[in-house]
Image (tube, rainbow over all chains, first blue to last red; front, side, top):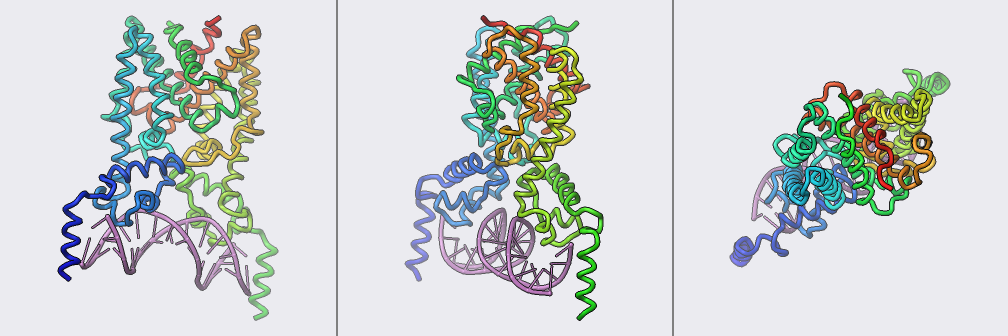
Length: 208
Length: 208
DNA sequence: CCTACCGATCGGTAGG
DNA sequence: CCTACCGATCGGTAGG
């Protein structure tokens, strides 16, 4: 009797997980599963199976399944905003800034597709205030476009922001779904994207 | 004993469904549910609940759940291709054709979002050969772009097709998710889209 | 097209 | 962090 209790006590005082960090392991497992089966296809039971723990284990680190997803969403926005901030600084001219932002957007979507899916509620998600306070990256695009066309009216600038956002978003999703490869033969996606964005920026305001 | 059997017989010979067509009712219910909860969130049990029939009823019309979804996908492509064909004819000049195709694309996605989700596997779907033989509408865009720039090299034309496709796809999805309304204030989405597409077409080939 | 079920799976909890 | 479960739900089937 004493021995069993002592064993539990000592286990509790050791590392919280035999791999070092169950929380991180569960997040990693979730990202893997979401990548394979989408947000709605992701299951807590599958995650614990991968992590090699019991079904009750996740509740030590997350209130419930949604809490895990919210954690991933939050983490995603941190990574996303950081990537866009880097891109913004990388571009010297306003034009280059817009270009780099677009490339970074697509690259993030493809490299962190699970995060991206959770962030944008794609995969049957919910979009829990996705672009409310987390839209720092979005503001960078607004700034870059404003610097590109300082004299253009707000409407035109808004239009160009929306245009850029739409292309990169659509481009990323079509590529994630494999739709592009299945129809148009693309050799170098990033080069292709750069050309498209360049084409958009080139004209600037053309109407009034 | 006899009476019960006779009743079953007569029921079998009457209409297959008290509303007239269970198959259509199930499809309608499915579309409603997919609109609300996404493709993966859609449940056969919910559909029969809405249609007011038993859980076994759907299997008179569909082999299984996936068959229902495939049916919706197929129906969606028929509607989609018809809408794009109309748009293509509506536009007089090549430029107008591209414009109308884009507008029709987005309008379809917003008005038939459930069909659209199933077609493109959005919502955690699978993308069961979505653009293989069903891509008639896509070919119209290729034709319109080719007519716009008859002398441009294939690469450039490919790029413009991809650019147009990306914008309309991204624009539609951002709007479906409510992302646009949440950030950029858009008064008239369709007018906005027309401007964006016009901007893309305007430049044509700018490189080499 | 219905009743009555199955087998499987899921999120979550009790108690240790 | 585990064992042992619950309650609920799902896709699907037998038999009529």
